[in-house]
Amino acid sequence: MRVLSLCFLLLALIGSAAAQRPQQQNPASPSSQTGDQTISVNVDLVNILFTVADRKGKFITSLKKEDFKVYEDEKQQAVTNFSTETDLPLTIALLVDTSGSIRDKLRFEQEAAIEFFYSTLRRNKDKALVISFDSGVDLLQDFADDPEVLSDAVRKIRAGGGTSLYDAVFLATTEKLTGQKGRRVLILISDGDDNSSRLSLTETLEAAQKNEVTIYGISTNSAAYFGSKDQDRGDKTLKRFSEETGGRAFFPFKVQDLAVSFQDISEELRSQYTIAYKPSNNKADGTFRKIRIDIADKRYKARSRNGYYAQRTTASSQP
Image (tube, rainbow, N blue to C red; front, side, top):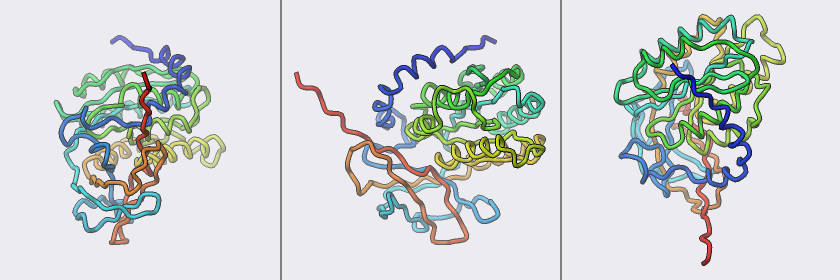
């Protein structure tokens, strides 16, 4: 299988990063998407996918619209649409850290990822791609709905050197996941310790938020290094990626437990809600708006992306 390197895109992307960011202020309009499979309903509504769990982590899927209150920048919003989302199409980017630090864990990562594809993907409805990254970023398999095709790519992953984590997430988000229908998901298997990216964590998170990509981080840090500065920094990075995009970070005690993390992600993706509201703040100023979802039953907690970027009005040029 031909390996398509994404590295050559990076210089062009970074060189024009300042020019690209204003263009990304406006998420893809639903007029260019199909039916009810979009995440953004239209330019007037904010639509949020979220998960509800109890204190033990069990997913709760039986709640009603009346059980929720939505706040934007601490102001309660009027909910217009609500539904349970257990059948939304999934578009998944699997990113695997192949830096030298994970060499002895790679086999377990591969086995867990392959099992995830077979247990989660539905033919003709879901699709996924596979990217590996060390000092560079490689697209090993573009979008496919066949678990065997994706598994072949996973089996060919080899360890390298360096960790361009931020660059890999940025490229997957802006070049592959942007504009895709359904739930846009990025699963990141890494120790979280970036040492060779040209982009920053802040720039990468901004891209994920603007493209409405949910990130799930699975830490490969070994219990043998528990409490080390590198592990603390890496785990905090994975946690921030997940919390700010509505995903979840996993920290398996043993590398053999990676499969359990994948199982939890698969279950969560089929146990969600969507809620929509028309913002009381109708300014098209491109600012970041914080979102909070409260539940009447305090035994439960909602988890969603922590906000969104408002659309920005672009002044038309005069002739």
